[in-house]
Image (cartoon, rainbow, N blue to C red):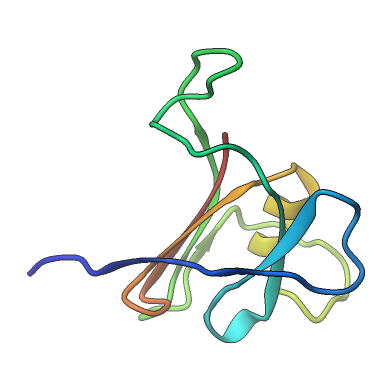
Length: 103
């Protein structure tokens, strides 16, 4: 079984700070990301690997980290990553798996 990795289209949306956009993630709505230069596996500023902040499995509903982020219209795993400036969203097979990274 191969993975069908679909990069999310970045679309402008209201309520963003200058230099930011939103990325649509399956049925979870928009995720705010900063627009940055094209990535090649490592952070060009530091040379460090990118860090996965959270993930979600659409088949089981399981996600990480298991945190409570107050009441919101977004799932806790998205709030956690957003609050830590995640700027890469990888959506595999239309929400079967979603990974949020900090570059």
